[in-house]
Image 1 (cartoon, helix red, strand yellow):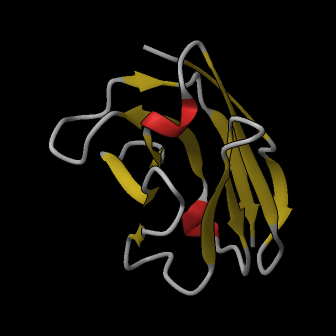
Image 2 (tube, helix red, strand yellow):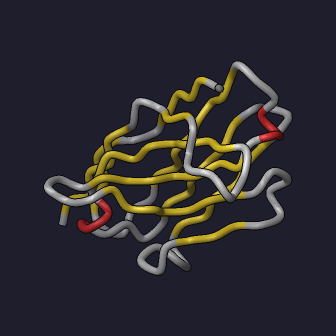
Length: 119
């Protein structure tokens, strides 16, 4: 397993931007498919975005398509989530997650970072 530490959350007004980072340690970062998942108050956990080992393949939830961009830097062992045009409904705790294959559930999770979007 790997260890994941998120950063970059905060309070932003609607229409603003934030960039989340997730630093990964403990194993070969490029061996892992990475994802972002969020949990809003009183709601179920929700998939946000994922990126494959090389960064060439990405997937997004419909609710964030065109506004969020996931990327990774394998040299820095870091995955990013650029969030633009934020909306109050994006308010949630955002978690970084890692898995070795698309055919298994996420194996490792970060502690989460709070994103709050004010209207």
